[in-house]
Amino acid sequence: MRYYLFLLLTLGLVNYSTAQQSDKAPEFSFNEYDIRTQMEFLASDALEGRRTASRGNDMAAEYIAAHLRAYGYAPPAGMSDHFQRIPFAATQPPVSSSMTVNGTSLQAGSDFIILSGPAVTAKAKGIFAGHGWVDAETSHDDYADLDVEGKVVFVLPGPPGAKDPSSIVGAMSAKRKLAEERGAIALVELYQLPFPWEMFAGYFGGESLQVMEEEEEESTITYAWLNKVDALSFTDIQTAKKLKVQLSSTGFIRNKVQSQNVIGVLEGTDPELKDEYLLITAHYDHVGVGKQGGQYTETDSIFNGARDNAFGTIALLNTARALAEMRPKRSIIVLAVTGEEIGLLGSAYYADHPLIPLDQVIFNFNTDGAGYSDTGAVSIFGWNRTGTNEMLEAGVAPFDLRIIGDPAPEQGLFDRSDNVSFARKGIPALTFSPGFSEFDASILEHYHQVSDEASSIDYAYLKVYCQAFAHSCRVIANSSKLPVWAEGDKYEEAGKELYKK
Image (cartoon, rainbow, N blue to C red; front, top):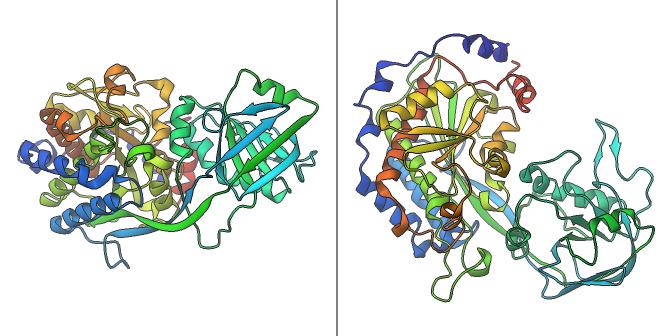
């Protein structure tokens, strides 16, 4: 019923209140110096790149929580503080590993990486198993006619049909378990992702973090990814009648650690609308120090993450303050998530363990970005998909900013930020990002580089970016028009299911 009411409402005009368009709203008075102060802390060397579960990450979480408390945001019902604690398994990679396939020796790091598993020394047969995927609902079973016991299983990446990287990464654990249940000694995925192997190996080839459920047991098989090499094509692996594999690894060391999402709730002013929530998100983690983060220099090894995503975290904090000073009709959930850089893990955890029912959330408005090359614009990942175009235009117009809809489409950016964790549940969602049209040299200069520091930021632009994000949140939270997935969108059916009450 509710979903179809959404459709009817989209036929009407957006009812923007006088307060929304008034220059008396608090966001019109944001101070550039206050914003710079926040950036100087969040992107400081003291926070050591804010890597998930690190000391610097915890310091950032405390900083965010202190702001939410000061602004009057309450913890969700039943919580004593503003932290949603998440258990992670931290694994240290093998000291040494090797792999040979049909006589071709592969180099650890450049040709393959091992992501998990115990110490192993084995000579075994290899076998290709499609995607290594089983889905009872669709009767898909790549293992139906295969005997993989005692063998090394090679598979294509992700579930069948998966194109976005987050879906492929999100299927890792399930695929490893499927192979393990069938007696395989190792699972090897063939690398076919739309970004360089070096980036993938940098993220996953070092210490890794995964959410650890209480009942989870350690895997007994080796799990690896294989890069394309001239001497061993993926086609050969898929078509070979015989595959002989030699595999060795000193194994992983696994420890339990903890990180946290930071959450605050602000009650809306309208008695009829305050049980509906606008969920505002940004990730506050980054990639850490030295080898944790990627390429670094002798003089600087800290990945400060000013653009990615202290930029968005500051927009989140200033929006929280503005909405608290002039509360909107609907209630607000401010959620700063951890673990984005290691697979959207914090937002996915919240989506699976919501502290307020998801069907009460009308929209997820996320802010994240790799950088900016156009200070006269903002970029929207998900433009034309949620019925919010007019609201967003109204939100940015007072600040003389243009909207660039879905920049760099080849990058699949909608599915690479935290908005997708909520979209999968059916919540209309998009990401508000600094202005750029393509991943050109101006973006790559600082993206995940040690040069992404507070001193490199255009603070006049960051101020208007924060203002536009805050004002857009106000417009959406007050609007009589509800966001809804566009007809035919891949998340439309999930939305119908979520809001069917």
